[in-house]
Amino acid sequence: MGKADEAMITFEEGFNCSQAVLAAFSGDFGLDPIMAYRVAAGFGGGMGHMGETCGAVTGAFMVIGLKYGMTTLDGSQSHREAFAKVREFTEKFRALNGSIVCRDLLGLDVNDRYALREAMKKGIPQKLCPKLVWDAADIVEGLIKVEGLVK
Image 1: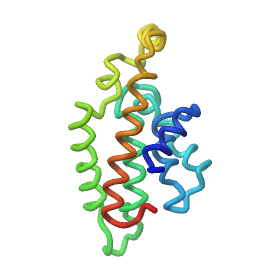
Image 2 (image 1 turned 60 degrees about the vertical axis):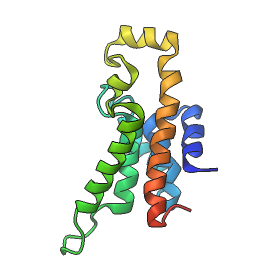
Image 3 (image 1 turned 90 degrees about the vertical axis):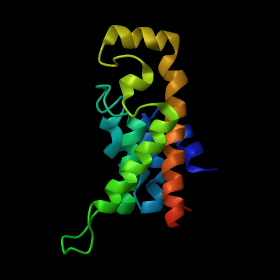
Image 4 (image 1 turned 90 degrees about the horizontal axis):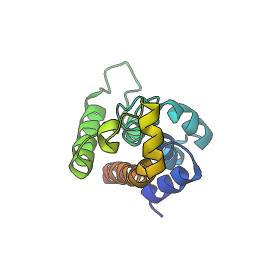
């Protein structure tokens, strides 16, 4: 089972999109899944349910940070590689989905309670979000597998 499948299962269990993507990779980086759920909790629904950057995308960005994030101040590392991988991920996600912005992807303002309620009745997030979670996890898995880290 690939990371995209793991993320989908976690999402379908009820965790948000960001939690699902980060948790799928947490074990590869020695991060406890419970801690991954906590770290990513505020990023669902486009960062705090504001409809901004898609939570599946922010979860993938966190995975990229776990792999490429700067951890020393002695000049032996830089942000360059992490930023390049974020851009590469973003290009691929946009090519598949047209945007990385939650409200654009869903076609509604998740901040508007009435609009969200109506969208939920129509099943819009339930239809669209699983694909976004799967795409984000699949893309980031591909980026990291190239580097030989994901099991």
